[in-house]
Length: 333
Image 1 (cartoon, rainbow, N blue to C red):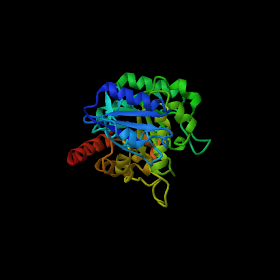
Image 2: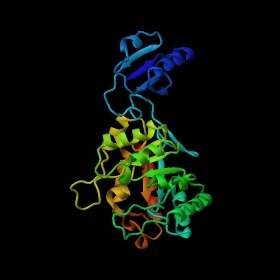
Image 3: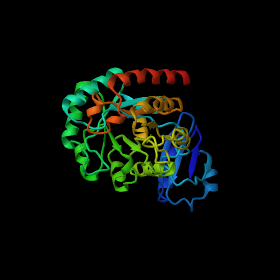
Image 4: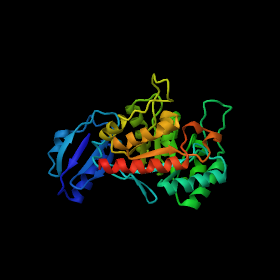
């Protein structure tokens, strides 16, 4: 249920109404906009008297929400959420350029790539320390050592770091990580999502390779329902009948997610296509359809990369792509 309060409503009366609703056992999601305040009622609202609430002099309107997701719902939060990562803002017209290698391999490698992508225009550094791999025999990442190397790269460049967490048990190792990424395979790891909801850190939530948009939003709901509103959604391609690329990049998800939710939406064209030459056109398309950012794999020596070299751009290729992305964004603004 959504209760829209009048602009002129006094704070004392707002607080009185909120306390009364909480006394009914309801959770209250408060969204304060320029012209109105929206109260999202979370819980069993079946016994709430809509007519009674609607008759209050501070209430503009009351309506029920049939969607199962509440916290992430744009009806509960009409204004775009802007996620802040240090000085970097994502959403609400702010565009994030996240770049770096699939996996951290050495100090020399991650620092070199970090400096290159920053020079090209990236404002966050990605890099995998813990790597979920289909084969148990593939490189699984440097784990704790990889996290330390990411911190070194951050110190060298000032770029906030984005890296994937796979298990609740690893959470203590990630205390100094700026953005925690939930990979596609863990999108419905609900125990992990609930724990991430207690961290207060920005969470980059990737869509599962066979999951619907509603399922993605419900996963974000787990994080937000636990108290963390700093969530970034990521479209990274889904499994379809396509036989020439790793996945199918569902760019229609971007405007639809913006319609359904107030959370920022970024796109990962690297994992979506799995082919480096396909990344630039898909990245430009993502910028054109209104994405709030891009997360792109960049490696200084893709041929010898320990993970996903085939989809990684070289630093000079990334620099050229950033220029084109900026041109597209200027054209659509």
